[in-house]
Length: 155
Image 1: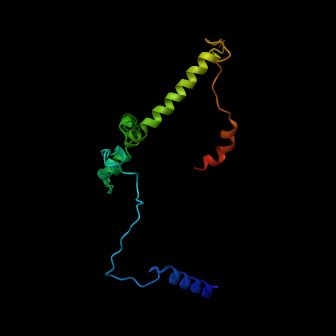
Image 2: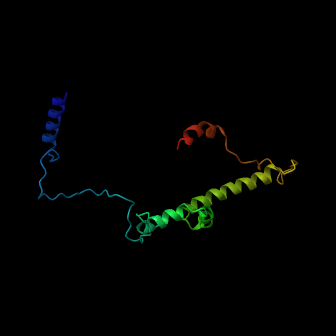
Image 3: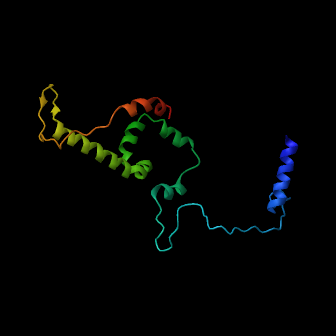
């Protein structure tokens, strides 16, 4: 089996005129003529905008000293983490997504409150403010979430 693979590889190398199987030449200069490049497309007319996440990467520490460990294990770390939450780099990176998700959730809650009524804390059900055919409650079927929850729980 190995003999067949070796012969097939040698025939393929000879047929394609490639130097992939030849010994490396230290003085050879390799150049690429393809127009494919890595990364996002670059338009010279637009200025390069560096995002917070990528821009702050160069200022991150790679060394974790004893002073940082003491601060990390402090009993006040929960209060400190909550007070600096909105200044977090992670929140700055995903702030737009969090805002959009929160906006959609509040809109669905408010729409269902107005078009479907609500139940107050004492258990009394109040009628909807808009009682019309076109104003129905918004919701998603729970079947997909019930089906996917075991596999999503493993993430």
